[in-house]
Length: 93
Image (cartoon, rainbow, N blue to C red):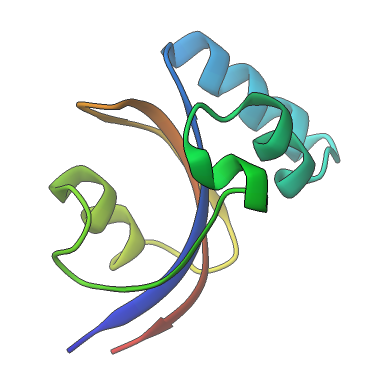
């Protein structure tokens, strides 16, 4: 079964998500931004979600993590929880 490692930042609005993505693209540290802004408990660990299997996360999140480019920041990705920036750090097919 496919597994992946990822970290994310969860915020309540698409605008906030876009603003954070721009700051990261301009050189801000993803982990630091997650600690400061993420509404998910994983923010305390820099947004690190550890390793998980395909199907463990909500579909919109899963679709990005198991299909998009590794090492790039993706988003905003909307789920029922809010808006995510997702960085895929590793994936095993």
